[in-house]
Structure formats: structure tokens, C-alpha cells
Image (tube, rainbow, N blue to C red; front, top):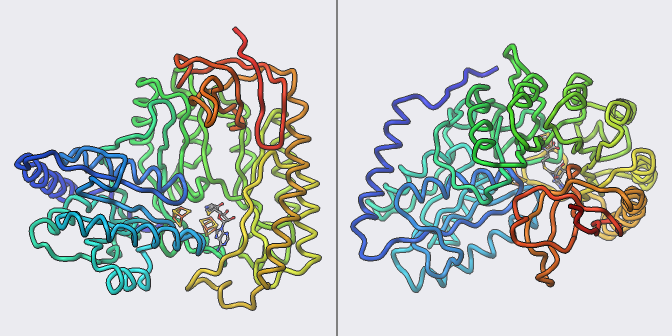
Length: 470
Ligand code: SAH
Ligand code: SF4
Ligand code: F3S
């Protein structure tokens, strides 16, 4: 395991100094400067954006919910599929007009997309109004880069340093959370798995874990502040602490001893090392939600091999069986990719069979998108029409399964964490169950952010409906 730097104190001092400089510069402004942060991608990016916003607020910016009146725009990008990159680039393109109205506007493009050299080049050449880029591993350099941009009025389009990309775990950053009852807590960064289709290891760097004590302190604080749904984040949480004398199951068990009324979740777990030990900790836990997101990707062993996933269907089914044995109420969800290079009709049908065998509560399905620099992108591709057809068949199969998983819940009373008014009807509220299923019910505003009991009276594939029980 690489040597791990937990933010050397010199860096921390320098960072605080840059923050102070920007804060003083902002204090001199006639009008309070505003920051707008836009996030694409996964929960990891959401968690990073909360740090970007936290740092910006600490440096004297006021959050705004529109880019039009912002003085600092941060676009936190995703590179997982081509669509995600296109969306980000199109939004960045629109900021040209905002910049035209405010020449002092600073635009930073951060996150996974800009960790790729060809995207940085593209931003440099075609998006001259973008001020700076920061890769995922450079997040903690925002104060310095911002100050340099302010002082020099130059563009700073740079890559992550090798040290940041492979070793640094930055601690002590201010966080501005998007919710006061649901929270993300990153426990590790990066990924070493190199699944053959995936860009993440190239854009998020090598696996590095946070110190256990730091994580526990953060969760303890969240619980004392009233947070009720806490998700531990990592690209492969099972890699937590690799090379040390602790592991993810131990971490989870220790966090579970924290007193309070909260759900504890984690994502994502890789099937190759989702252990019985981890499942036992979940089953015996007090706070750990009986919900497991275990991305299968494909139901065909040769495709799993070509994907470099290091497990087969037998191994996967063993985890599923053990989970259901220890936690009969467990909700199991997954990710599937259709149209991986070389996937045959028979191999796709094996995925349909896997769906029927496992019976997932929910599925996130994706059409394979070639990612530059990954091995699978070089292989012969499945035609788009075939991909589309398989995608539709997968969705249809899963809809039936999801409905049949939800229907038996009619008549049950479930504990639901209320999120707020649903879109479209002001008297209907929505929330999430321990298994992360969406529930709609007639509610009142005092329920937001609190647990309520809902008796389910209707079930569809994607949601449940019910009445509040006192
Ligand atoms: N670290 C997590 C997943 C991260 S990406 C894990 O290993 O499970 C989330 C999902 O995006 C993946 O599970 C996969 O299903 C999908 N995905 C990743 N790369 C993709 C690609 N090139 N095309 C389509 N889907 C992809
Ligand atoms: Fe990508 Fe595989 Fe790492 Fe998940 S485990 S982030 S799919 S390389
Ligand atoms: Fe996207 Fe990066 Fe997450 S590529 S899915 S934002 S790790």
C-alpha cells in the first residue's frame, strides 16, 4: 500500500493562509460575492461539492441558487459515460453568456472529467472563459488556485499532482451540507480495480483510506446534530483500510456503536470482496440499514471476466443467499451494463436469467459507453440498436420484478424518513424507507427530516403509497 499522507500540517497552514487572503479580498467588495456550485455524477461528487461550497463560504462567498448572479461558478463534473460529459460541456458552454455580462466572473471546472488530459485541452482551447480546473484529488487546493486566479488574472488549467492522486487524504475541510438530516461521509478515495469499461480509476486515483478516528468523529458529530441517514462513501468500501490491521466490517461495527436514532448505509461494495463478515456485522447492527447495493454488471461469467470483475455468478449468488439468510428483510439493488463489447444475445439472456434468480428490489441499468483510455473501448463494439433493444428488455423484466417485490409490502407499516412535499401536489409528502424505497403519503411540514410510520396501501414498481400511522 502506498504511503499515506494525511494532509501535512505545512499544507494545512498554507491552505488556511490562502483562505484568509481570499476572505480579506471578499471583505473589501462593495457587494457580497456569490458562489454557485453545480454537481454532476455520483454521491462522491455530491460530497465533494459540499466541500467546495464549504470552502467558498468560509472564504466569504454567499451561496446562490442561480449562476446568473454568481461571481464564482464551480462545475463539478462526471466522466462515467459520454452523456455525462456532454451534459457538463453543454452547461459550461452556456456560461459564456454569464461571463459576457460579468467579466470578473471566475469559472472553475472540477471533478472527474477534467482529470483527463484531452478534456483539459478541450477546455483550454474551446472554452476560453473557464478560469481554472481542479481534478478530484486536488479539491483541497481550491483556496490556492482561486487566490492565484484572482491575483494573476491568468487561467490555470492543470492536472492533479502525482502525490495528491496516489497518496493524499485531505482532512479538515469545511463542509456545507445540502441537507440537515441526510449526510454523505467519504471514508476512502480512489479505486484500484480497473474494471475494463470504467474511467474511475483513471480520474479518481489510487485507493487511500481516511483515518478511522476522523471518520468516527465526523459521524458522531453528525448524529449529535440530528442527522438521521448517514451514508459512508467509497468506490469500493470493502477496500477500506487495506494494508492496515483494520477493515470495512470493523469500521462499520465501530460506527454502529454510536448512540442515537439514525440509519447507517454504505456504497459501493464490490461483489468480489463483499464478505460474510460484513453481512454478519450488518445483520447484528443496531443502526445499519438492511439495504445492500451490490453492482452485478452482467449475469454472464465470460462477460464478467472480460470486465475484469474477479467474481462469477456462483460467488455473487452465495452473497445474495447469505444476505437473505441473515437478513430476510434486506433490500438488494444493483447496477447492470448492457452492450459491453462482445456481449452476445445468449450472454445478455444470462443477465435476464440472473435478474430472475436474484430478484433485485431496484436496478440501475446503463448502456455501455466507451471511455477513452480504457481497455474495453478498444474492442469491437455492439451496435447501438442492439444495445437499445437489450436495454428496453432489461427494464421491462426488472419492472415486473420490482412490482412483485413491492406488492407484498401492502398492509405493512414502514418507518419512513420524510423528505418533503412531492412534486405536483402540495399535500403529498415523500420519504424513503430503510431499504431506500420511495413512499408517498399525506403529510405536514413538521414531518420533514423526521421518521414517520406509514401504512402502505398501494405499490408500484418504483414507489409505494400509504397513510401516516400515529
Ligand atoms: N464503484 C462502483 C460504481 C461506480 S460507477 C462499483 O464498482 O460498483 C457506477 C456504475 O456505472 C457502475 O456500477 C456501472 O454499472 C456503470 N458504468 C461504469 N462505467 C460505465 C461505462 N463505461 N458505460 C456504462 N456504464 C458504466
Ligand atoms: Fe469502476 Fe470497477 Fe472501480 Fe467500480 S470497482 S469504480 S466499476 S473500476
Ligand atoms: Fe462520475 Fe466520477 Fe462519480 S466519473 S460517477 S462523478 S466517481
